[in-house]
Length: 353
Ligand code: KG4
Ligand code: ZN
Image 1 (tube, rainbow, N blue to C red):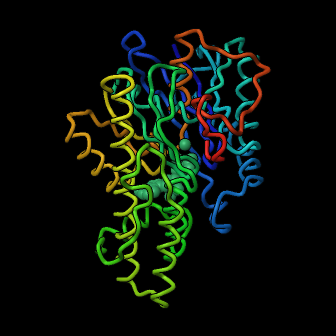
Image 2 (spheres, rainbow, N blue to C red):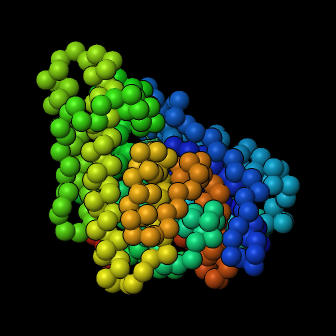
């Protein structure tokens, strides 16, 4: 089976074809076309929804043509068309969703509405054939949450941010250090040569019960240090980057440790811990979580950075997982700018689904 997957929820326009292998146990990426819009948004210091929606319209159709060509298939050889139907920016979601429905209708194939967070959560099954159940840490510019993944469509939120997303915190502190948007990756590079102990930044939520995150206090504390210093020298920037990253790593590790314990108490042993989302590319975070998992003999799965950040292959794979279970959708499926993975949780209150 082959699924075409479209991603347009934020600032990446993407189309990919994934086929199943090993009787559906895993998948093979036949093509994965991603176009980042970062250059169009950089001047504004963040993603501008209206610009994003228009850019998706410009980019999506040619990307779909390329994704099919690179996969060496035409539409008649696709078994379903999947699109990320949320959570995300409504203008962008509408572009991908409408394109997927139109293609499905034209080809007479099923349409599948994929939750973008579900796609991140299921990626480890594509890359590493991970069996259910497991725990997924989803960390990106728009979301930060820890999810128990029991099966396709069966997710329970263990914790989520009560304020900023991890990527948002990275980007805001990076901006304070004079780095261009999105500054997360450059902040990581600066931190390599910095002293993580020079600035004593807070570790919000550390030691508290539960697995919720809070990152805005850490960001504000970084701002205070910058104000105290006045002019920032190059070494100040490196030390601040290293101190901030060390604090965020400590917070993530503490929260994930609690979340894994909560999972264990409720459901027994997890088969692994998975990361997804753009911040999942951060090596300090990967190393710290590798250590945490090694302590408890848990498998740690970190998909390659290009599959952590937004792309079409993870949407196509989630579509394939759904198709195999007969979970297809009606063409009337409405976009869901807010779409908590766990409807029983209070994700929606935080505005960061
Ligand atoms: O998942 P993603 O590509 O897009 C969404 O936000 O949905 O994630 C982008 C975010 C940005 O905030 C970016 O700064 C952050 O991920 N990021 C990083 C790193 N690479 C990307 N943050 C810290 N360290 C990195 N290496
Ligand atoms: Zn994402």
